[in-house]
Each structure stands twice: as structure tokens, then as C-alpha cells.
Image 1 (cartoon, rainbow, N blue to C red):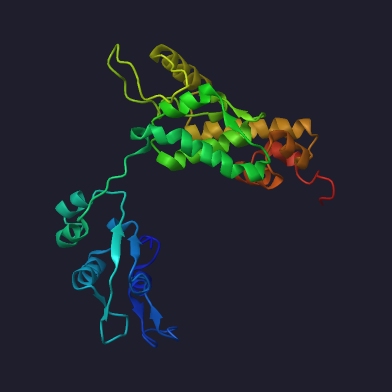
Image 2: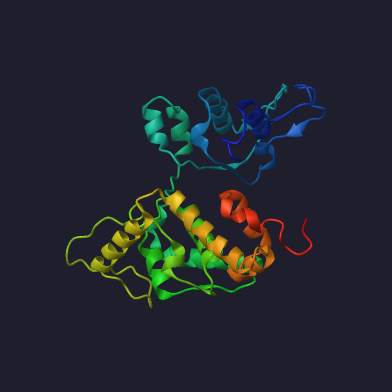
Length: 295
């Protein structure tokens, strides 16, 4: 249950349930997530965003192992393992009074900290290859990473974690003309994604086996060249501009035929349409409506 996705009144009904007639529209009694998860596990995501009032109600459920449905009179026993997740520091929120300390200590029984992607770089390439495999049915291609691209993925700091990695792979799949993704296809931000500088003479030992390492001088040169090429614009604008230019060239070569342009880009036509709608590039205008059979 994503605690941030619902208004507090709806969240209370979703977690605790309600009796028939408890509110307008409650035409039947309904079990909440705590009851439905009894005997199992309930994951409460974004737990740090619930209100102080709801924190008190949740604390009671956790302490008493019973839940009172909305409009109900008798509490119901539950036996649930609760896993709570947050992207913020509950300790800091508890210290500042934004989160109840008693609830924090009730939840903080077995703390598990999921390290950011930059601190578990052994996961980067397996994740990247999993994303490629997942996109294969749509593209109709089995794509791979060349050694330089793999090196770049490992050396990037991934401030956006796994979501950023997934977006980078999807972008590369759309932009590449071959079945092999290169470092240029990834178009990673060379400044924002740079790893902290290492002491002189320190040798990296965490690069995946079989992937040749780049020395610091090469990396600095690449970052500088990429920044110069970008014109010092924002990353989003730079990537959108590059994607728009690549798509425009494909459309021009196909003489406005979007189906042919999609095939030359190695993507589905629906994917091409999605990018065209998002980018809204005026150069796409003359290509619209030129597919065979389209009006």
C-alpha cells in the first residue's frame, strides 16, 4: 500500500476497512489491507508521508495487533508482519517532531538500508541487461552493450538510481541504429553523474570482469567533450533535442513514412508516436498523416 497515493480518509478505509453504511457509498462491509494480509505481510510504502493524526491510529494497530473498521464497534484481531519503506530519514523527522517517536521505534525493529545504485555497482550491468531483455519484444531486436557502454554504465554515479538506469537504457534503445548499444547512445550527463574524485594512484577494482577500465584522464576528456557538445544546456533539453534530431532524420529519409522511420530506428511505431507527441518538434509536422492508409 502506497501511503502517499491516497487522501487520509481513503487511506484509513483501505488499511482498516469499513462497515456497511459507515459513509455515503459504503453499500457493503469491506475488509481493509490489515485484515486481508492477516497471516502474511503488509508493505506500507512512503510511510514517512502520513499525517500525525494517522500516525496515532497506525501506532494503535501495531501495538494492539487489532484493527477497528470504520463505523465498527468491535476491534478485530490481526496477525500481520509489517514492512515499512521510506525515502526519507524517519529519525530526522522524529527529531524535528514531524514523525511520532513512539511509532518510529515501533517500526524500527529490524532496519534495512537499501544502498543507492552507485554503492552496489555489481547490480548495474545485470539490471541493464534485464531492461534490454524486457524491451526486446517491442523492438523485435536482441540488443547488447559494447564494452565501452558497459564501462560507462558502471562509472556513472546514478543520482536517480534504478529509474535513471532504466530511462537511460530505453533512450539508448530508441536512438541506436544497430543491435549494439554504444557509449554515445547512452547520452549520460558527464557532470551530474560523475563519481567523486579518487586519490592519485588509487586503482579501481570494482569494474566488471572483461570490461576494460578507462583511466581518469580519458574520463575527464570525455566529460569535457560531452559538456562542450551539449552547449551547457540542461540535460533534459539536450537529450530531447538529440532524440528529436535523430527521429527527424529518420522521418526525412523515409519521406515522412512513420512506419518506415520506426523500422529504421529499430522501434515500434507506437513508440515512435509516443516520442513524437512528447517532443512536439515542429519538424515532425510534415511527416504526420503520411503513412499508407492514414488520414
